[in-house]
Length: 435
Image (cartoon, rainbow, N blue to C red; front, side, top):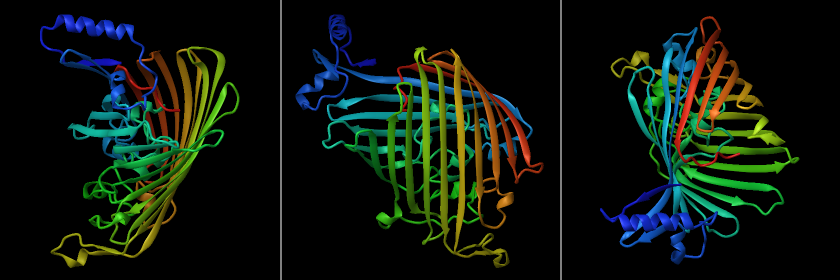
């Protein structure tokens, strides 16, 4: 834990006394629901000062590499917002994280990110997540409220430094957007009384903005990545029907002492930007299996298998793209249509000898209908094979070498070869990653 204190200037005795109290105390492993009078488990009062604790960390991801495709083509070939997508160097993501207890009833998290747009060279700052989570609700209930990643599937709720590979799977980029699906809202979780880990999540969030690509999105995002060539139609929030809804069922099992598994199904529904009657439904399934030998050498050897499949029904409303308002002859009319897209990724990572690991990932994505999809980089048929080698000097750093072979119908030669070398390092105390 990282102590943050507001002690009176020059009060060395108070500081020394506070340090002695910390060294002698053993805080409980989880928040106590006892009430406001037990708040000293999170803070210590020293005279007029209050000593509080949070986890503070900074994680940085950088990449360097090259491709047979030029930068303009790489922008869509490597379509994820944190992918290495430029010949040369890329600042993929620098994340400043704050995690800690608010009081006996809530914990809080905030994640602020910085990266440099690899094409424009502009610095970008974003509030990735900032939310609170309840700790003392009865009946296995938990509420999360604020700005957060939507808990759809396995990869979308994870931050880029949690990914095993250096780039986002193709189908995630297409259906959930370049920066993942995240927005302000509220989520209710229920840990069921079943004899295995089983949790149901239901959420409601805003459906607009560049982080809701398949829904109301934004005019800038749709101009850059139109879905089926459809124009952007701005829509107001007039009722609860204009928001985004999530339902997820997540389950976990210990199959043996060395093998565990987790799997889930997810569904999303909400309005889209094709017109006043446009709507989108996305559903998917995911699974992960983890084997770790007992006994082991600080976690090695291990094998992790992970896969996700997802499908989108984009119900596009009838619309007219006026183009040049002064030239009616260039107007393009679109009929009602349901655009269907689906895809998957499957990956295996083998920690064969500490601190080395190797793996391979396969991606597939395609649009099933719609005009011009074979030339659309975000709806054409795509195959990607990505071998990876990773080296972990310590728990605070990681080096990765990844090769991508892409077969895509929108490319002039239908194929591309890319090589990326990535470096990651971490300062501070970061919370343990989820299963």
